[in-house]
Structures are given as C-alpha cells and as structure tokens.
Image (cartoon, rainbow, N blue to C red; front, side, top):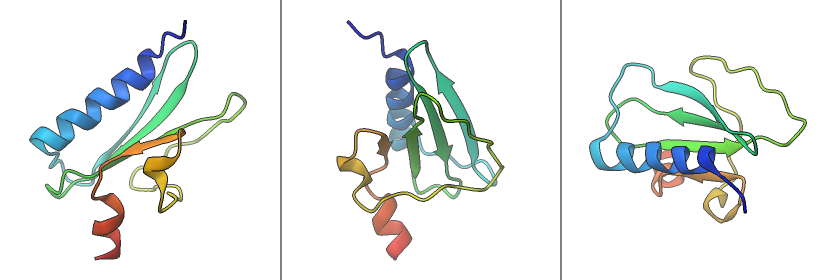
Length: 94
C-alpha cells in the first residue's frame, strides 16, 4: 500500500486554489515530498485559479527559481506525473 501523502497534499493545494483563487503578486513555488514521491507545485498569481504540479523522478534534482516554470505538456492532465488547473493550457493559448 502506497502512502501518497505528497500527492494528496498537492491535490488539496489545487482544490483550494480552484475554490478560493490565489492572488499573491508573482505566484509561488513549493516542493512537497513524502517517503515515496516528490512534487513541485507552481501557483500563479492574477486571480485566474491557475496552478500546475510535476512529480519528480526518483533520481531527479531540481532547483526552484521564483517565477520560472518548466515545460508543461499540452496534455498534462492525462500524464501521471502532472496535475493542474483544467484551464491552464487554455489560458496560456488565449
């Protein structure tokens, strides 16, 4: 049985952003981890309820820079290593 506490925490962060929004200037980035998984969560400012998260691989190291986001595949919601706002890609295209 997998205790996926990091995954649950990322999902909760996403639910809260989608429900209440996030409006801090410049957004924010967090590393959420448990003994099984590590996730990076990007929260976007501007009141559009945008966020995305990426699961890191078992041997991956990442440096987090404020305001910098890695590449997100257009079909990220179908990928097990990503989670995020349903309207993220649509907003980016718009």
